[in-house]
Length: 157
Image (tube, rainbow, N blue to C red; front, top):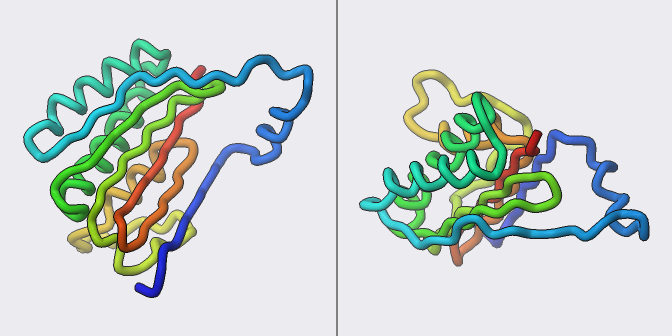
């Protein structure tokens, strides 16, 4: 890999966020719900904690389940491919639930395709990031020699 790269996919209407600079928009707030370091031994407990946090914050039903599965895939990827440890943060921001998972591994060897291309059924890897992307409203990936950070978000009802 020659240097860091960044992928951002947002399936919501990009123009919706431009009104934030308007004087008629109320306070834009950020509420941190969870910030933890983790390793392989804490993924299960952390998944349950994420489910509780995002449920309390307002996600429910399939949206809650999808968000938790996406976050679990990111946690697992950080442990398997990113050096064995990571950092997760979940926060509520402007009507969204946001989760960011970071590791300090060597970064991805090659960029992920921008299109929502499902991995082949017999492909042994590549499912985690694809699922995280499919199960959330936005997906951002930044990777390089210093590690990988993935941020996903889902709109609150």
